[in-house]
Image 1: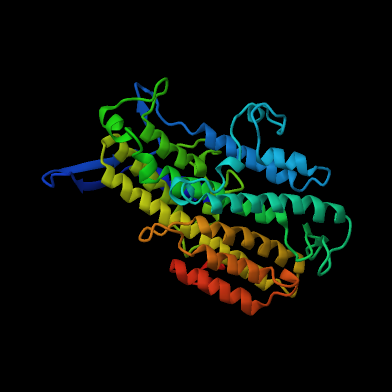
Image 2: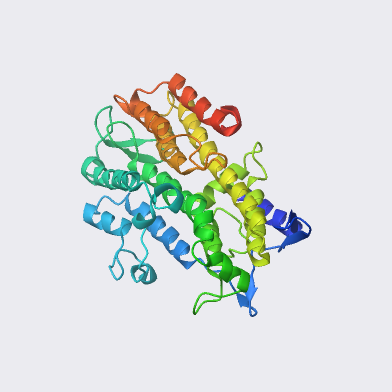
Length: 400
């Protein structure tokens, strides 16, 4: 991908990024300098660790692929989604031996769901229901042609890809994949690991100030929390310290996609620089700078989700009459990204940029009656305009 090389060159030319902030007494200026790459050490060894994030990304990749294997049972897919340590759910023995799972971290952030377990349960159950529907509605109709009201296959124009949809034209696998971006990667990053409540939990500040490392580890707990947020974006990179993007099917891929849109060029570098400077601020014990960088990441990552929501609504609209399979594919991705909007973060209200009721309304409108078979361009434009306005761009900017 051309964008990967461009992004890497931006990193190499941006050697340091410095922030100045006053200390608590207001009589001294602290300079925090970010390294040229995401490299931090204690005792001449790396202090960066986000193995759990890499594991979940890899689990999600294999799980999403399995959703298009019509020989799979619901029990097998459920087990991949809610993996238990030692179960032989994946092709990778390291994943099987892990105690991590996708489902356990869906809608599980400290800021959004620690006191709202009802919403967390409902969101997880929605994933469960989609998995069930893929097996019970779509798999039995795998060789049938899809028509309004009946699941089956539908091929894109010109001998293109075959899509497997429910009776409303929805690809459950796409809705699930794009909802994982919000429910797992975005929620854990923005509303958990970058949360002040998590970063400063317990004795984290005092320990970080004193340079006290986690027992048996080479990092302070605060450093580790920040790194775990970083891992949900860059954890599957060949060289996570100098990411290229496009290295997984989730948030990493779509930061690259938005970066490639000339209306949003620079957003990927903004996120990367904020991660580096925020981590450097933790090392420098400058928590004001740390929190400023967390806000930048929240804003930019939230924008990525909104841009792709509108992009797929518009791509679906453009082919709605000429190529229904392509349109249904785009609109299925839109469903997942719109669902992921509930995990975005407004730095002023500290809640999602668009509220859950409105998001649910969009999803209900798109799935009304025969769903994508009946949806109109006017409806797609209206939802696109509302999402774009909430995030400060236009549907035309996102449609590139």
